Length: 255
Image (cartoon, rainbow, N blue to C red; front, side, top):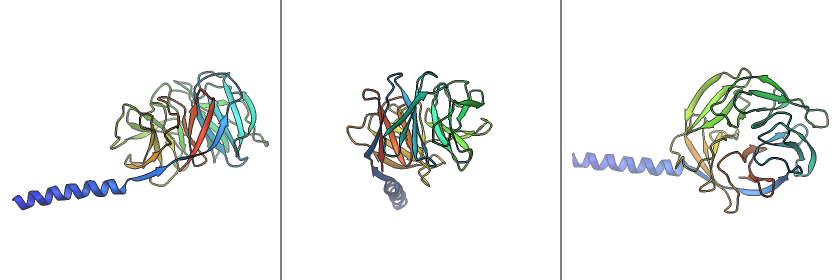
């Protein structure tokens, strides 16, 4: 009996050790900035990458008159316009070849057509209603599965990108703490087995999960990285993006 207890305890210890070993750790390095030229608004909410024109787009949440700005692949400012909709999430859809996003509350999902020079036309809504868990949810597109991902209170919720209908959720397992998790935003990385990411602004870490909610990796941000409890966190062109409201600039981090 005693031997069985010892063996059981040893198996638990080994299981924990193997689990810890399986969890990867990455170090993030800053390599690009996008600086807003407009002075309107405070909370930048997302960065999107257009691979066809090699351009970044970023928007400030809170009002349809707040800026939507365009930058080159090197981070050089190209163009500033008004958002035309109160935006939250922003992403490039490779199927529609449009920049799409979600608004607050019951606004729904919208799209911007892209002109030949990469500039965006005013947005139009193609799905209305609160097709997201919370008022300020910032969506991220899983283009392969045609789903939009949203974070809320320890879970990620999935909605059909075309219809806006709810299509399931997963609880994120083994999160160190929910107390200092950015409450509005989940990122979708496209990295196999590390698709979903959330920001811990208390420890300056990004936690990565697979599509079943299993905790897979930690991205350690530099100690001087500026993090926040809402908005100001995104993913585009294989980079984590963090927004500093004081300098009005996004910093992109590779890992």
